[in-house]
Length: 132
Image (cartoon, rainbow, N blue to C red):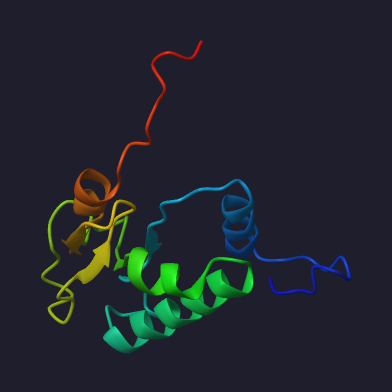
């Protein structure tokens, strides 16, 4: 649901979560485009591109920097139900060649699956061992 935040209208949950993550100072973000197996999406690249572009636009509108969204946020087409692009690259989306992104430290990564994003792209935050 879209709405005008200032007017008190209801917003979509994804938009609210994106705004909240930004306000909380989250520095790493992964976007999963789920339900690529649905009748609406049909594993089509055009549908993925439409959602990817809409998500990028929404992230910028709620406060994320455009450069960060373009360079540091992998947007991965997945199907949680079927398991596509979760642990291994899906044969149902032959068009998906992965995405090149930079991690928080500036290291370049080629990401094809959610597992790769979580294991290789995400970096643990530093911790002060001397603090209580």
